[in-house]
Amino acid sequence: MTTDNGAGPSARSPRPKQNPMLKLVLEMGPLVAFFLTNYKFGIFPATGVLMACVVAALIASWILTRHLPVMPVVTCVAVVVFGALTFFFQDELFIKLKPTIVNALFGTVLLGALAFGKPLLPVVLDSVMRLTEEGWRKLTLRWGLFFFVLAAVNEVVWRTQTTDFWVSFKAFGIMPLTIVFALAQVPLLLRHELKSDEANDSHW
Image 1 (cartoon, rainbow, N blue to C red):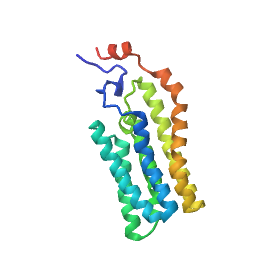
Image 2: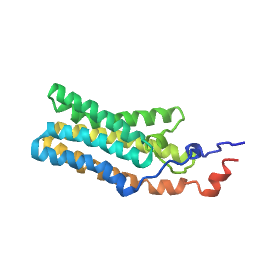
Image 3: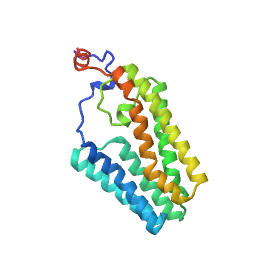
Image 4: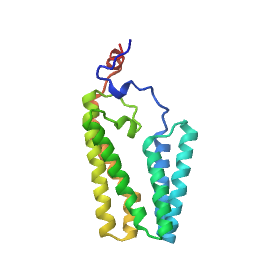
């Protein structure tokens, strides 16, 4: 008979793993295309290119892994919706608001679920890590707050800077900030990681 005993989300069956370099290309590719198109042709053509690229990246991810991670799916839907609104109203405000709304949504879902004792970080971040329940709670809290910080930073940047600066920040600022934050969580991951024998024991 199987019990959880602290394994929490770590008891999930492993999901297909994607080559880290390819994953980075699929995430950064649409942003780079967005930046280059904006530089040459402006924000509206760049928005159309971004919409096409995020859909293409999602399709490529599915073909390679037969799995659609939650965050890219939500991001893709948001880009398409807010991109369509940008074209419909001919107002760049909508594409600028997309990062604010998506990051605030992720933060709200993570912290809201955590308040009810259900850390959803393994689902939202498509995680395959094995952590203790305490580890998942702490990591969920940190990521939830970080998403709100990203939302706030996006608001400050688009409201105070030019469109070109905002595009550059979206393409080359958000990802480095996220990587630095993720690396800063390594000590927490190491402290709360479930070793192979612990993970196996928790299933019995």
